[in-house]
Length: 460
Image (cartoon, rainbow, N blue to C red):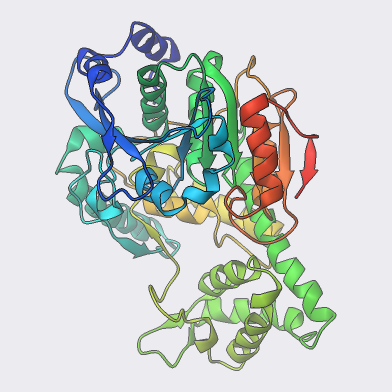
């Protein structure tokens, strides 16, 4: 369960723990392997924010100073979870050139994601792996076996550092963000959260609503819903729209037969997986749906090959879906943060009811690439969900969202209760906008510098 908000605010309102406060005397020095003028420092924060005088861990902070007179800082996180803020900023300094004319760019390597992620903060000493998405358990015995399997993955990591493992949620990252804000001496937070880091931002808004000046959620998931059931349905509908765009294109081009083949192919694959020419690889219906959704959301350049892959699979050869490199099956990372953020199924009955409802709503996409499927990897997790979804609170300043197909809709749902907020929409494929869409970047920069909010639904 979440720690009481009043307790959290009281702990932070009283100031940082002694080790964290001591970090204010440290100097900023050139970052390791730096070639762009970025300076770094260390900040000590509690491993468990409910124990401010307990054990501390190190957060490595990086800063690009403003090229003009600085008017404050923008704190940047790239998501992942676990995206190394310092390395990613060093790799993409041009993204921030215009914003740096007026503001410092500050980032950090998030807690727990250490050397394997190029992170320089205290890391969990785990063998981080990607694992195939588990099959849907067909009976209680299979559900129990899945629980045991997931617990086995988790325990191998948890036992290395039980305290840190249990405090890896987006709410823990949000509390780290508040410590960074205080350390920098900023009266209010300016935050850019890309992809999964948008969930850090939503957690921060719930925990510290009075501390926000500006906040951008770019290409993220809606973690601020009063109904997780409804959000699962909306995310499934987004997947259905990816396939519907592809099918509409096919009907107007040379693959008008493909939409008619698709559902028959999925039904057959669910009964008997479709073989490939790759040894020991055959795909069931959900596998094919997952690959097809991923390709459909890439837009027109990927659609001709997708049409051919479906035709070939309809002839009992799914080789066109086998990835050229990497995992052969749809997979996901070990969910050390995700499994503390997402509600999970209590039992097989709940799982089966959810899956049946989603398949009825979206017959082409099914449960593939939804959090209902991703949550299967969290069944049996040895720590509870500590950062449950909840609506954003009243009293927030106008926030700004951004995203491409599907993403902008999710962000709009998250921000809908916040008066004056806006969302930048890109009617096309992609993931996040700031680094790749100048129109969106210009709007976001003006929002950070002048608090200028574009119209409620701005196309870019």
